[in-house]
Amino acid sequence: MLHLLSILSSVAVASASWAGNLNYRSPSEHHPGLGISIHKVAKRNVANATAFTPAQLNFTHGVASGDPYPSSVVLWTRISPAFDDDKSNITVSGYVPLYNHDTAEYVKASSAPVCVNYKVGLDQNFTRVISSGTAYTSSDIDYTVKVEATGLEPFTRYYYQFNVCNSTNVSPLGRTKTSPAISDYVSKIGLAIYSCSNYPFGFFNAYGNPVRKDSVDYVIHLGDYIYEYANGDYGWGQSIDRIPLPDRTIYTLYDYRKRIATYRTDLDLLASHQNFPWIPVWDDHEVADNTYRDGEADLNNTESSFVQDGGVSVDQRKMNAVRAYFEWMPIRQVEMDDNLRIWRTFSLGSLMDLVMLDTRQYDRSLTDLYWNTDYVHALANDAGRSMMGSRQENWFYDQLTSSANRGATWRVIGSQTVFSRVNESVAYGNVNPLDYDAWDGYQANRNRTFAHLQDNNIGNNIVISGDSHASWVSDLVWLGDSPYDEASGNGSIGVEFAGSAVSSPCPYGHNITLTSANNYSDWLVANNRELQWQDLYYRGYYELHVSNDEVNASYFGMPTVVTRNPYEISLANFTVKSGANKLSRPVAGGVAESGSLKRGQISQTNLTHDTSNGTYFVSMFDLEVL
Image (cartoon, rainbow, N blue to C red; front, top):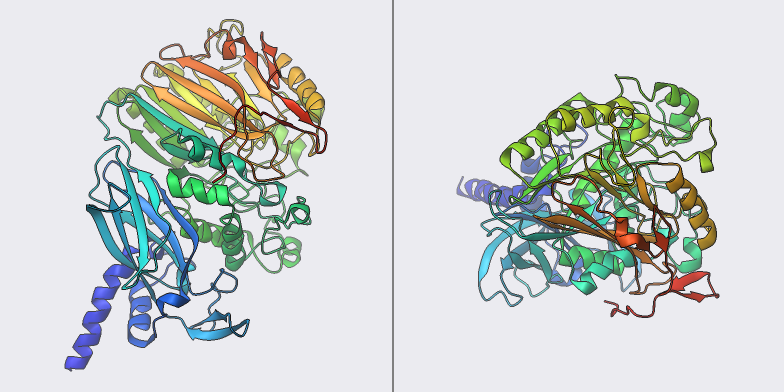
């Protein structure tokens, strides 16, 4: 009896540490295909498993932090019994294959728990530990660890580290930062904003440069963190030794875990996660191309589609992708009974509210699947269509209202796809000139957003968006309802900053020349009244530096992503004054380095041409590679 009580006591104590790993609760405690019984996992491992030795364990994919709150932040790592994660997340009859380096083969090892400690301090030497704890992980969640460090002070930088319990086997040292308290006065916040990182198309140099400059407080990722394609279908990874694994189109839970793990080997991505807290959302390719509520471009709940794709249904594929995403990303589960909810708000002091939307997966109506473009074009202004579903849409409007009522200076709205109207008939012809997979395909939903802002006199609105693999800067204009003067910007109710891709190729041609790209940009700027600057050529990112008086946006282009390097080009800089609700004139000070600038000029005086690969380098900005 005493022995039984001892076992039960051990299970109870261990269960608390299992529950401390948020990945056992996420993305759902209750969904039959996603839920994990913590009690069963704890009982199985404590009562029956033989622990790995510290020497058999490796922190295989660095550390990360994210979703900062004023008193807490989410911390992440992966501690694996295999040198890499190949096969380590496949469990068979309670066993996980363990790589034996002496024999160069996989052998069966018991699906033992791995115990880790974590600590958080104000300095790198942890002279004073502010928060600490213990958590278990196992093959059930791909040996990932995600914990919430609590008891922290607002808007404060912290250092953190994991270690295998009772050992000196430690993770890399991480750095993070909490958010300001909701009522705190904050003079300035810096954000680095990314989207669309495609592994076989090039190195993720853009992630590393804000680390090298130490120029921001937080990282915002607007989606397409991974791509689901096979390398042969999309990219030239073999020529630059960047083949995404598994080397096939992915469908299963193992596939999605392995694909994210491959991306997480890029050194600049690792450095960004290690040094800045992230606030991410997904776009479509975290699951599949052009996803919506009921399907995607290549898998549409038909019998032929089901057979063609190996017996994986739309719902199964989405749940596999969602589970892997929550396991690997330093993100909170906002609502445990809603495993697809990723939309959420961050109040960053009195300065700003960051509203992160899900305009892809949650509940959006039928999108453009390539074969139905004419049909979606005809429905584009249907009042019943929604980018986000009625629940999220009403929440979105409530967030805008409550933000204005509490007196936040700015509202920054994270949208996966471009919000503004964009006439692209230069590329797609006059029959269907708009991108119906973006907000142009859901015009009534966009009009309702404009109406809410206008009717409630909500100003200082900044939309940030990704997805398009190009850079766009526009006044936010309700065309057809409100008068707008493109020369002065009068009539605008905000500004949109849309960013290029980290490495995904230009949508107007993978190997487009700078001259050709700029010619397309000239046409786009000339034929879209609200569009003030556009660039197609450069892969890159942009930074927002938000103060109470103004928002400054700085766009950076990567001269090349074929090699890992620290170079970048300052492409253009923009200012939005508080209360103006438009871009300051002259836009970008009248000069940009690439693309097309309305009523301005393009200057490439800082560029030198490298004829060996058709790229441009800037020699005056040389940062040390991490």
